[in-house]
Length: 124
Image (cartoon, rainbow, N blue to C red; front, side):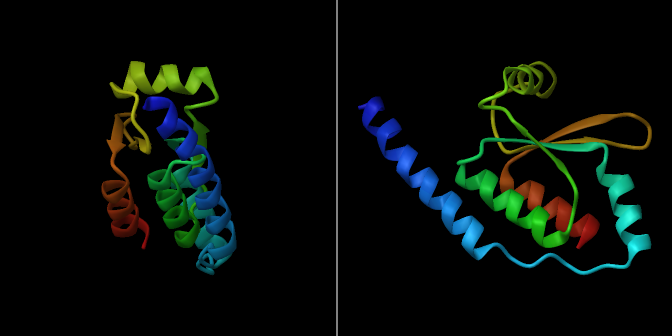
């Protein structure tokens, strides 16, 4: 049964990725000074994700729509990111946003709805 779901997930994931590319929302236009300010803030953030995960696609779409430059880390195909996610974040679950505040404190935020809500409150 688990092989059936794996076999089913692959084409569905590809379909989701294609739909994402075709229907990607426009990025918010902003002044260069604001762009530099946001880039400075988001440079300490990273999104741990799987390319074909629908919840990760949803989160990446929100990041794109808000015009944020947040590094994406493929925790499925890059063992170092998977290991870091488990070691520092505490569990192997995506999407997960790694946030480092001004004091160097690291927060690991799970769940696409929580991540999107946080990003919209902070940058929307």
